Length: 364
Image (cartoon, rainbow, N blue to C red; front, side, top):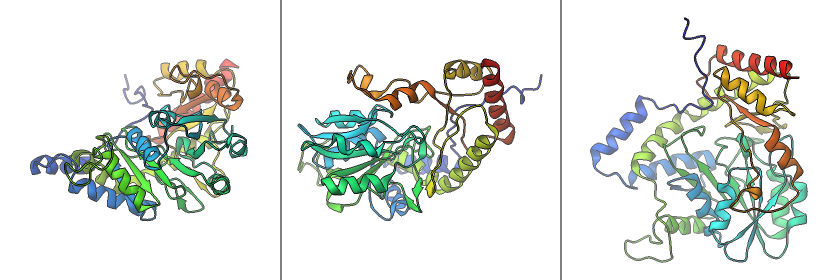
């Protein structure tokens, strides 16, 4: 039996090398395990990818989103416009801050916020637009920023899946007032767990540092109510080393996506608009009618796949809203993510594309 021919292809595969392990060991040997100089180094190094904006490391992307919303002064009685086709953390961060998420539909080709619908939702309670850069593709920030400026709204970039994504050479995280990246193990880079909050205004970055550390800058001198959202030096050590590999990994993801888009012809493959840099946190196709059957067959072939996301956020029990978002509803029924990570071989890519084409022909 040839085990190589029958090996499973995982949907995601965190890559932790010897440099990350040595970096963690150095922190362990130092005895300084909590937030310290390595976190500061990680923040400094990450800032180079976001036009030297102020960076605040936290213990998860979700903590980062909560910090972002709170640091803008958004709370009880306020509203924030956010897509329903996203991970729940986007809307949760708004609700946890006391504000109300106002759900908006998506553009069916990009899976991102449909900017043409934003102004119809703006009212005196609206304080911000949360633009989610889903699957590694930036939302249409030019249009969103114009609307935000017109109505004096904050812009929050949920860039959890969009490390190094760009529009006309401008990186994600540098468009809005604040942006949040995630370093969960399945993301394009990881710190084990963690997130980074990126600020245009240094004064708001200082508020974020208070929020992550019990509301204090000086020990036992708490200025505001805060959380414990601190990142440890252990996690930051992994992040520092991963950051050095991010560009190379991104190019591999893009090359893998290019191959899949050229080889898959029985499903709608991802769109990358002109001038946009898609970094393919997920390679997501659209399959009409037969998505779930295809997913079952791919799993039987040992090909990892997943539906991101099977339920619109506004319909989750945590929100339970009745709202007409037709493109969001359709996307939950048709979207299927396939492996695109840097570890894939050409053989893996061919197997994925051939399986998608073969199964969809058979199903139809």
